[in-house]
Image (tube, rainbow, N blue to C red; front, side, top):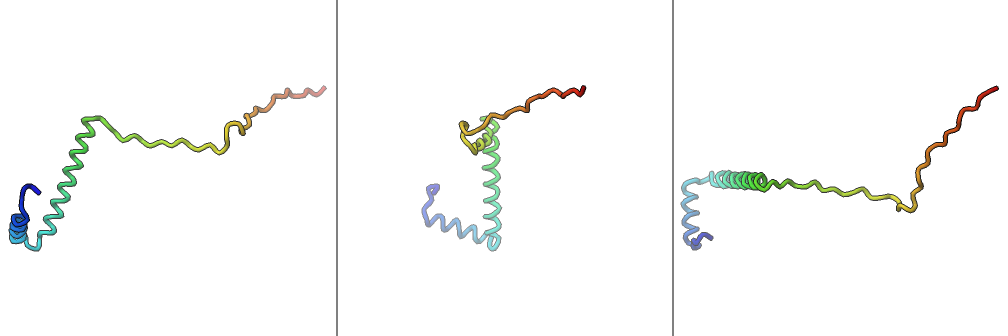
Length: 85
């Protein structure tokens, strides 16, 4: 990793432990959150440049019956009013 041997990594870890002491977990957590926010920002910029937006996924509704089984809708027949004489 970065061309460092395991002994060099242990020395860097020891120095970090001496500098930050009990605050080391908090510092690491803050560094992790910063990296995540940085990646989100880079992805947002890349999306703006390429103009890509996630397409909404569309699934058509399933037909309950086959087309051949369907009856054609019938309109009511018009009957003129009967005149009383």
